[in-house]
Image (cartoon, rainbow, N blue to C red; front, top):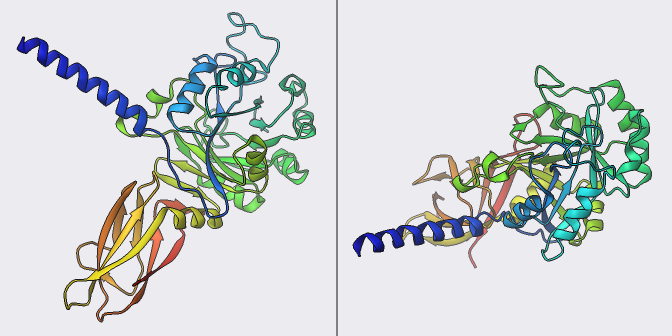
Length: 369
């Protein structure tokens, strides 16, 4: 009897743990005052190109991760499973995923991957009408056709060692032509397990949009160790409405950042807006008659914020680098030196990056009610 009870308790614990993993894994970031914060993975694969799973798995993974949108960007030219899964219609995975997603609150963006040697390498075309029309021998013409269909086109994994042995993203003459002709609109600064400072620099120099994607081929849970608290790389998109058109408008306007391994990457304007929405600083109270002020810092996002103190004040119980865990509150003991009704705290946000070795600096006012 005791053995049966022990077995039941262990089994019940495993079930509860698994259920907790499914609920806790949902990615959460706050909305901005003016925009919705939508979570999207805009570069994923299934067996309809070189992925390992049927489209339903991609939909189910996205729902468990709490994503708002995905795009099944199958390789147009690279079809290693074609003998087993022949499909002359390159729109097939999008059609299947769209049908499977109907019972779920998940947007499916019609996309495809233009797959070429370098240059120009690989690129994703989103919001297309017909993937079959992009199968054109001349790469420039393929980009032109994508744009005729109203696509947002971005350069995939520019640091990929299969095409860049040194792992360094570099501009080419062909990419410059594509950008100058407004045929290329974005670039992956994050792809799968890699982050590229050089790609971020290209996005800044050329004024194209930085994105982060998983480029998942296998299982998201295995690749990113979801059960151990990991997360897939995604793009956070700041949209006016939760629709495919809303996402398209936001991307063309550059309202997005990448989230990768707790690192937030993108343009300073949007990083600061997200951080302001994620962190709140509350004036608590002075400790008795002293001039040591308790300040509560609350984080409403999935990012663990690393804050380096650049204020004129020091902290009594922390070093100058503090960490505010996701969805938690941390109390700082600030040496104000004399009791004041309002102070200003100044931090460098170390887990956010706006260019190589540059983090945003932000000031937060803390006032007594």
